[in-house]
Each structure stands twice: as structure tokens, then as C-alpha cells.
Image 1 (cartoon, one colour):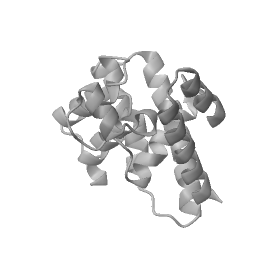
Image 2 (cartoon, rainbow, N blue to C red):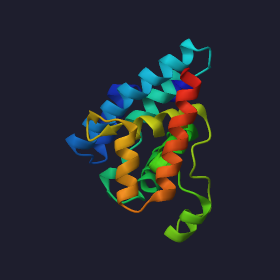
Image 3 (spheres, rainbow, N blue to C red):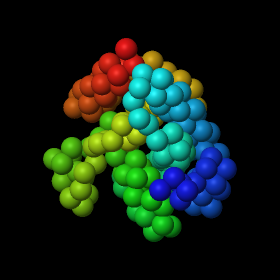
Image 4 (cartoon, rainbow, N blue to C red):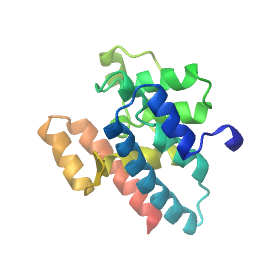
Length: 173
């Protein structure tokens, strides 16, 4: 599968071709750097991580921001990725990165098609987690993101982010 994964330069080209702003691309690069750092530490702990998938998925996680900045940018991005023939593993990273996942109930409420919108694989979780550690293109403590979600009355999302943080950090210990 890895030979079909776009490298960083190819991913930037895809983001540009689909109309992503310089700010979105800068954010994707920062998330990618953080995701690769986390994935590298997980590998050092003996876990098997597809580094090329993490890089490609992180670079393209916000592809949907070329069309919308609403929560459904993940769904839109996954549709774009599928339409241009990207591997399902990248489509899933894009689809599942928002808010450490969208529950079935939330997806129904949002009017999304029935599907799995919660990160399942280690690579999906690493990208979703790295995204929560980057605000625009700057690294932030996870507590800042959790408090932001709580302030927006998104308590369930805040709890999912906290649990994802605990899951990833426990793997790093």
C-alpha cells in the first residue's frame, strides 16, 4: 500500500490543487511534524506504526478545508480523497480526525451517512491526537484544547480528547 501513499511534496500539491489556503497547508505541515514525532516515539516503544501513512494522512487530514471550515470538513475531505483515488487508509484518517472522533449519535444528529467516524487504528489515533496539539501552526498543551472544547459546551468531545491523550501517553510511558 505504501507505494500509493503520497509523500509530503505530493500531498502539498494535492492540497493546493484542491484550493487549500497557505494557512491550512502550514497547519497540516505542523500536524505532520508532531504526528511523526509521536509515531517515532511509539516505534521506539516497540509498536508497529506505518510512518508513511502517518505522514500522508497528517498532511491531508484537512483536505476538506478547501471547501468548508465546518465540522464536516472531515467528511468533505474524505469524499475528495476517495474521488481522487487515495487509499482507504488515508480516507479513514481524514474522515475520523475531527474532535478525536464523532460518535454514531453525533453523526446522525449532523445528518452524516452511517459510518465509523472515530479513530480505529494507531495511525488514525496519532493523527487525530497530533491535530489536537496544534492550533493553526503552533503547538499547544492538550489541556488548552480540552478547555476550549468545554468552553464551547462540547463536553463529550473534550472527554474524547482527554481519553485519546491518556491512551497515546500511556503507550509512550
